Image (cartoon, rainbow, N blue to C red; front, side):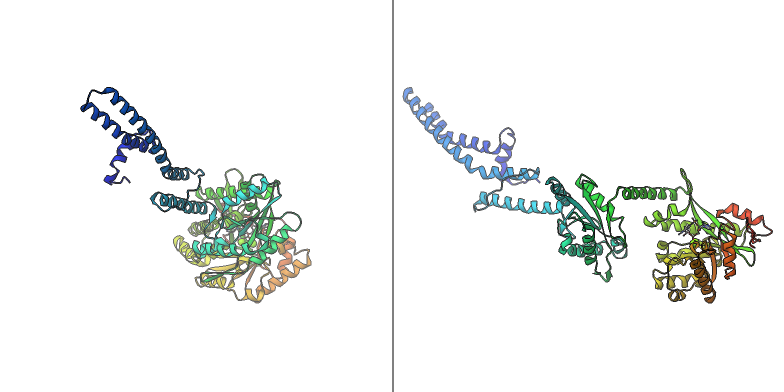
Length: 565
Ligand code: C2E
Ligand code: MG
Ligand code: MG
């Protein structure tokens, strides 16, 4: 802002002379000032002229020479006296333009001396602040990615072998979701402090991502093992706010020049490897294949979002047959993706990506709505009162609003609660018994049935499972398809069927493909079947046609090809 101080009038006037720098202007003023006596003398002689021109010229010459010598000495001295101002000005300008500048002296106490000292101090403080902003992560008080990459570059330039480790705090997003970013940053700080203290991670430990640290680790045998042991040491629980977090720490390793030749690419490769690590294999080495897989996954997630917007999903329905009553008792709704290029895709091609990207919730909601819309159509037409089983994913099951969402959807499509059955896999159901019991109880109180899917694969504790309120067990295909040969599968099927009967639960054999399997299971007391032997999953129209082709909507469902006995 322009100052209105009147004392700047002369400065302001002379500022217009842009060709002269400040020092030159002062020297010009001094030059003019020093010559005033000489000019005054000359004028005085002219007005009081005595006619002795020779004497006048002599006097003027002597005075002129003396004045010029004096002026030269004065200007030289003045020029030097102005150096502090010039140096300060240059230092400030160089700082502003990001150029290096010489340090200003700090030991002087007059105004110009303190001007230099203050400017030097201010520049030091600003430089440190800028450096911190550019190279330090404030939350963890560690160097940031930019700094880390510079260190990696230096190490590469020095010709030493370089292996970058990315140390990833895998469950950090959960803290962000459950609490907030502030608490997540606090958790990162605690883990960063532990890693810094650990001998395995001491070399250039930096924060290189929202949930990743980076460091340089040695080469040769046993690096991965050392990193794994170091992570285990640092993964003790840490208190954050009102909760205690059990950090899941994974690492990825990338080596120069095998995995990348540029520092940034090397760090990316290590991060990409870290995301391939898992609880069972917490340290992963970079592999281009893994990277491609991750890129494909990203593409798939992008396509899934588009598919949701463009309504590319459909439901197929696979009947569930009651062998004794010889009729279809309902069907399971199974998700399909009508991909514009690849045709009809089965869930295994996309459900993992949907789960991983948070798309499973909107997708699951779409399935619920679509299934209810279908039931509404059937209620009003060819299949009144038909029952549908709907799969619910782990992510959906975590949603505290699930019960309300289901109830709202049933009300919206005017569907009776006992027309739907919620299927949850054994693994998801047994992840948190207290939560599962709460949700199951609410759903069942509302009249909705519950089935435990893929039963037998999750090795759930039977005694704990008994305490959950549900209606049906679906024996996984893995055991069903081995039932006519493998003794172990036979024993498991017998045990599961007996268990279900003992607990007064219905039991369904999933994936029955042959008459032999059906007979083996029927002999062991299984009554309900779902499998290709009876019917494949088909679109709604085909299902209605197939059922209508029978004598009534819940017809005899004759085994398609082979006789049972
Ligand atoms: P699931 O819930 O256990 O569904 C049964 C799967 O077994 C279906 O595979 C079905 O087509 C298949 N199947 C049925 N009978 C036979 C048979 O005789 N032989 C063989 N080989 N397979 C048979 P699909 O449709 O590929 O679904 C696979 C899994 O994807 C489902 O397993 C379920 O876990 C999941 N899924 C499907 N739709 C949804 C959905 O809408 N939401 C959620 N969260 N998951 C779904
Ligand atoms: Mg299912
Ligand atoms: Mg299943």
